[in-house]
Image (cartoon, rainbow, N blue to C red; front, side):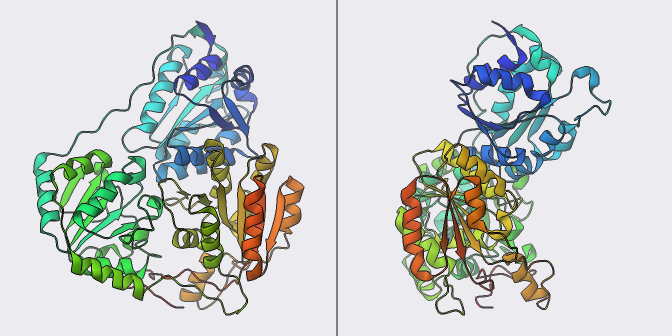
Length: 556
């Protein structure tokens, strides 16, 4: 077939079984959008309000579905508007392909209108990127980009294509998608050493990260916990990777982890870390972390071994395959005293929340009610801040890919776009974006996208009129000097939502929590809920800067 570059892009997307792309048109991608018009019966395009929203939607689509997300933007500011979304995906190892247009090849490097070196800009935040200057190379580059995005440690890849390349013609031959390269198992010596350590351990502790979800290794993680008779803590990125209704689950570890998790790490004699990079938000004071017990680390990226935490056994490989290999030889163990102690700590240190207003609303009650009404089956996206931690603490996640959140980069404005992508990927699921009023203002314009396509997400805003997480730090460490964290914006959220074409509801008392949530869930259309909460409700537990993860603050 003799096709244009733009048509080759469409055919290659179909090869990769791409059914939806998110984007925003412009001059440098006119050929691509003309092709999208002609392929609209096979490739769905979601027009977002802003390119950053497109990147976050592609990210949310990928996290919810496990497939590669795709976004498209024009040259110059269109391309640079993708940067935050690309960096968000890179930090959290999310497979995504970003396609950008650029000026014609003879205009490159001349400071032409809407020209920018997007490959240079995104080099540090992509697994790989390309500028395609020959249409005969285009199909190969696209195929390779999808392979790279989805193999090993997953992540974003960018393809920059000058406009005249998308208009040039060449022969196109269909091909089957390239299969991701399979990782090898670790050397048998390391596997044997890990098995020996697990068998000898009397107080094992399993810590699971986002790599468990990327590898689809939740069943193997569950079996490891049963076989080793161990408690399990999950990172923010692994929420739902282990059933939180299990008595083995002890909550998150780290800055806002549970007291039970901190007691478990203080008293364990072995840590088995699966698919985690030991972020500073987990280790807190890294110099005090894991000083009294050995660590077995399973990770697909060798660069993560001994980067933040020194480990005794390094098992490089796909988490699912490594766990399967271990489980083939790991005998069942029983540690009744250890698991009994874990149960006591869970009873002694439950997660609690209160407000000085006896009739006030707590996020805990709202999120637990939401969990009850959705049967723990909803997909939650979040912005970044206190509400993000409350969502992780108080919604009971049962399955992988239920919590989509910006963990590594901490991107305020992520959640609304991500919720759109997740809902498009899984139209039969209920998707709720948990937001703070500060984060909401970042990308509120994507409400228009929800309304345009009638994407039935719920935007649940915990409105405390402050930048809550930063304010919490100002209370602890800056003697209550609330510099620029008291928002008190006169935004009428209900009128704003309705102006965008979104149904608005309000929760201003405890009695309204259940009926408002019930009504919003029943509508199956985009809804914004403005939930008023006290500005001085804190995220607890909390480990102060410089302190050990073993010593969280329980009260403020």
